[in-house]
Amino acid sequence: QVQLVESGGGLVQAGGSLRLSCAASGSIRSLDVMGWYRQAPGKQRESVARIYGGGGTNYADSVKGRFTISRDNAKNTVYLQMHSLKPEDTAVYYCNCKSPLGSWRSYDYWGQGTQVTVSS
Image (tube, rainbow, N blue to C red; front, side, top):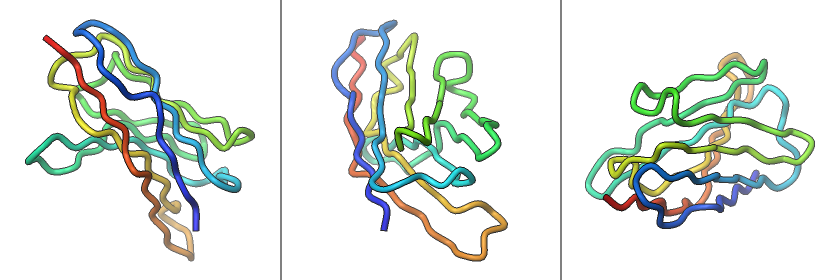
């Protein structure tokens, strides 16, 4: 079982930046889908950004142009660079590792989350 540990969250003023990191135990498979999700109090968890084995990415409309997801398989780490933060970005951010769509073996791992708070 893969263990994911997020770090880099904190309190930042609107317009500021944060860089989240997700360190994985063992090795991240090159075709794994890595992603960042977030959940605000009383709301459903939502996808923020995903990065696929071939390097392709997808972003929620609300963060396009402001957030960048990247991965370093050699370091077993996934990053989320966040710029121009807004109060509505406030949430607990979770790292996720999921098997590719066509994989014969299914898995879906989650980190414990890191709090991001953006002040007005």
